[in-house]
Structure formats: C-alpha cells, structure tokens
Figure (cartoon, helix red, strand yellow):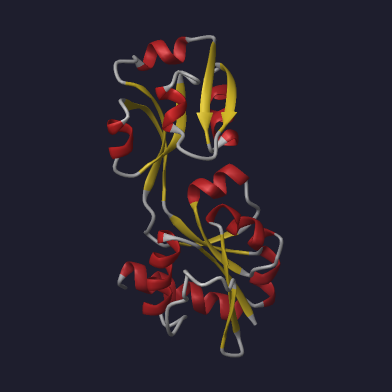
Length: 210
C-alpha cells in the first residue's frame, strides 16, 4: 500500500486536482472532514496533514509520498527525494521592510531584528551576508512584526504582494522562487520503485501536458 501525505488547505485542493487528472485519485478527499486518514481501495492511503508537517511524515516513512512547498523543504532541510515540480503554489521567499527603507542601508546594519515563520532560511541568509540577526519566530501575520517595529524586516513568502502593500511594506530582496513538489521517502522509493515511478510519470504528464 502506498501512503500519500496530502497538505490541508488550498495547496492540498490544487494537488488533489492534479492527482485526479492523472488518474491517481478517483475523487476528492473531503478536507472539511474531521477524518484524517482515507483508504483508497486496497493499495492506497491518504493522510491529511498540516502543510508544514508533510516533509516530516515523508522523511520518517509514515508516508511514502507527499506534496510540499519548496520553501518548506528548504526550511526543514528535508532528507527526501524530489520527484517532480507540480507547478502549483507559486510564491517567492522574500525579505520585506517598511516602504522607504533602502535595501543597501538595511543590509549594511551590523544587527537586525527579523520576524519570520522561516527561522532557518532567515538565519542562513543573514549569516551569508555577514549581518548579525535576532530571529523572532512568528506563527501568525508576520507582517505585523515590521509594521509595529518589533522587527526591522521580515522573511516570508509572497504570492501577489497584496498583503505587504496593504500594510505599508515592500520587498527589498527576493531569495528564491517556490512551488509545490512531489516528494518521496528514500527507502520507499526503492521498495516501491515501480508504483512510485508510475505515480511520478502520471503527475509529470499532467502538469506538463506532455
């Protein structure tokens, strides 16, 4: 049996559409259900999990396959195989600060307070540019850190940039682009090679139209 870790929310719904179009799933999983495990026939199981937790379930082998954003994979340094770019969930990892803050001036500071949901990515970035930083881990609206002055900048993902603009913030640096990836547990890949390669090929065919 192949177990797939599917993220809850909009990313999971978009991933479901791809899995259905590729013939891997026959119908949608009721994401508003309190049920978290769904058996699909006799050879597949779906786990509905928090998006940030998908790489952990896959890396630990609780799930054979999962769908996770590249941003999450980088943040957790996940030891998994990336099978395919699913071309959904596009966003950019950015550094943002209040409007009018000059990029060169900001990065020239010897010390910065940084609000973020991505402490590992933020710490590595500022270390690479030789700027000491205090990383403030936030779980909710990261923008509020910079708006209130608790932090001088934030590191967060941006899709349209609308939330930043509404709160008087601008992107001062783009770190990398992120999309959802089909990932696989390393041991599972060799144990279920044929089945996993079949799923991988079906997904790639669907997202590329090949």
